[in-house]
Length: 405
Image (cartoon, rainbow, N blue to C red; front, side, top):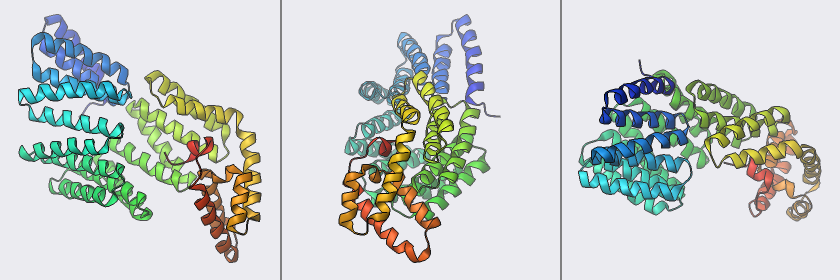
């Protein structure tokens, strides 16, 4: 039976004592790297960095360039996850140079993938594609079909970030076909998830949800709790964005349960934060505040830059509720009275709250569920006007908290 990360940590810590006792530096190095990976998987990236740095010292001491290069790849990825992208890039460049020198192709692929992800996060999407295409060439050269699937997926992600939707979809579809060809159900689940998200982005909402549900079923059948949690998180995000708070919170709660089970601290924080936003929009401020505070505490402990977002939400939930209610009432009144585009423009000038994405989503839901059929057309036309105006406005605090993430 495969060990989860907590069990793996206990095992490697025991092994580390033995390696140190008998003076086996290579074994010690391997266990330090394994501990780094396990802590990284659990979201405790700072502790992972400590283990990788110890491993790096030993790899240089024993003169093993392959271990050194692989350690640098993991260390660069850890700094990327901590948000120190420049440091991550420098380390990964070192790793690439070393691994190319040793002829270690799989290590070179890992370094290229890391550099691609850092470039993507820095906003240099074209450079990211260059790294990912190099990755694709090598994995095809060495006949690594799983590596090919991974590279195709990476290139698709880069094109998605460039807003080149057709190119992104093409690479995601090629990755899905390859996952089925090599009969890798985990890869198939991830590719269905990628396509589901892509279809949602391109306004094929129901098709996207169906593909995500297929992805979720595969993950459950595999017993892959990590992938199951990832898909649940994406489903929650979609339903948050379409304004279906009940289903969004249901998926978030399922995701949170698994994150706690796996000891995934970042996953716990992300879910408690998203659920806090959902409860805030549903008017359940006390519960939202408790969850936001938990997210803030975890992200602060992990040194994540996301702690600032959680703190902003806490401040809003503590002091902004009464103001929110008053603004919402005034905005609803102004919306109902605006019967032309010009009147809607004047209403927005007097009530900027009307351009908040969460407010507009709530209006749409109310129109669908509560407005008489003979009046729906007129109210939907007002929504179209409001969205046209809102698209020209900059989001304020509520837009940042409750808009698309």
